[in-house]
Image 1 (tube, rainbow, N blue to C red):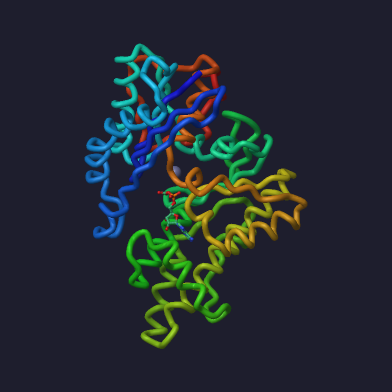
Image 2 (spheres, rainbow, N blue to C red):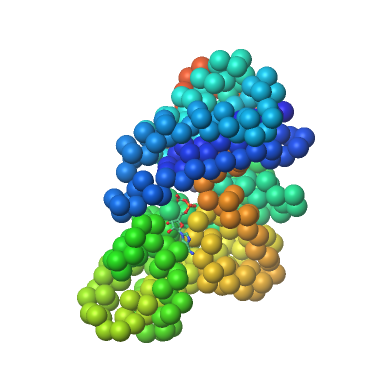
Amino acid sequence: MRVLGVETSCDETAVAVYSGAAGLEVHRVYTQTDLHEIWGGVVPELASRDHVRRLLPMVRSVLAEGGLAPTDLDGVAYTAGPGLIGALLVGALAGRSLAYAWGLPAVGVHHLEGHLLAPRLEADPPPFPYLALLVSGGHTMLVDVEGVGRYRVLGESLDDAAGEAFDKTAKLLGLSYPGGAKLAALAEQGRPGVHRFPRPMLDRPGFDFSFSGLKTAALLALKAAGDAPGAHADLARGFEEAIVETLATKAGRALAATGRKVLVVAGGVGANRRLRARLTEVAAAHGARTSYPRAEFCTDNAAMIALAGHERLAAGEHVGLEVLARARWPLSELAPPGAA
Ligand code: KG4
Ligand code: ZN
């Protein structure tokens, strides 16, 4: 089966073709960062309009790049949620309509299932089961992945996602959106231990996270430190240490609780160097190893949507003519392929 995947849940427009026989054949991502940067965050309406402008030309160019015609396809998979509702609707309507016009089945894919299965885009994927730490601008989750469609959410952020916390604190430090990587670069020049920010929820059992208090702590520390030389760098370092320690400790506890031997890390925050180093140490302490999908498969992309859609279409699952788009869609509501 060869599946066209479409992703428009946030600020990336992406299209890909995945086939059961050949794996990933083509994939393209356009990121709207420049469009949103001046506003300090993603503006939903601007995101939707840009998806409208770019999606169909991108479908055309992806098919051309793969030397494919619509008749070479067996199905269409589009991201149905969770995400920004207007942005989702653009991809869902386009995906559903193309499938209708081409006489193909369509399936609405859960965005997080895409992230959880992204390691399978690689030639030598980690075997099931594995523990996944998903850390992006929109999500922070620890998930036990037993197989395709069999996900147990162990814990998640009760408020801000890790990337969101990075971005908000970066903004306080005067760094432009998205500031996570810029804050991490600044932290390299900071001294460890100058600031000791709270490690949210580490004193509580369970695997949930809470990061919204950290930005308040950062704001207070910033006011107290004033314009002292190196103050921003020290603060960035302290903030990064708090987030990294919290994520690594909870991931370690989840490895201990599940006995999993592979920790898959996905999402943009997974690019953080210090986080990677700590997770490697923590995993080793539990007799486990870390596994990172390629950077382009860690952040939002359509390759993972085409792959997840392929698994579901291949199991005989498809939706009727309705257009599925859900801003909120708990992962726990997702059934294994073909079961729905
Ligand atoms: O997965 P991703 O591209 O998707 C969205 O949620 O859109 O993640 C983006 C997030 C942003 O919050 C960004 O600031 C953060 O990942 N990020 C980082 C680093 N690189 C990207 N956070 C900390 N350290 C980094 N090196
Ligand atoms: Zn995502």
